[in-house]
Length: 158
Image (cartoon, rainbow, N blue to C red):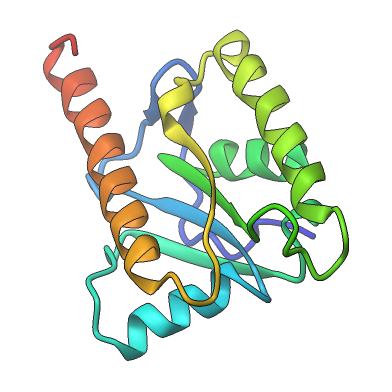
């Protein structure tokens, strides 16, 4: 599995995120096929707002999203990365979401050591019935990453 779906690879400044010149925010969202992707689909069919900056990558199970894949997304220019999984106990592959959760915790501890702000990564649970939650999460996360980017560019602190 690879993040080759990211358009226009750009130079990455690991300290802060994007170093591109077009100013376009890029969020990569890895979504579980059975729950999170279905929730995203329902959000779309319900015409709920989903930021256009969010690029969805559909995976069969969130447990298949290796930390190296998330780091590759950052390296190839993502300003933020989301992993949205099935709720605990609802994984079609038994414990894939638990594996994803453990990897997310590990990655959150590792990101600062790589010079990437932890706030640029989001792990959460979204079921097929949670279109509103998907819309809210993607909107909130996009705004959070946008604020981090603006603060970095202007030199302001949170």
